[in-house]
Length: 52
Image (cartoon, rainbow, N blue to C red; front, side, top):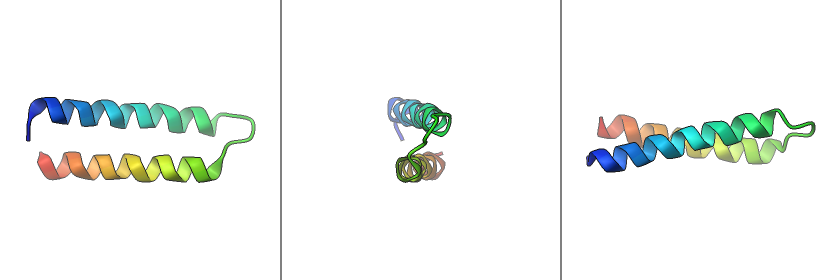
């Protein structure tokens, strides 16, 4: 896989991690949003691992 593509995936993965953290630390976190973000983060992680 192209190094640029892998780098973009890592960047998206890190951004999702930040969004999850931000949502979890809010006074009233949206658990549905957290779940959705975590699913997307896992999908990206699997794509990264498959291409490694």
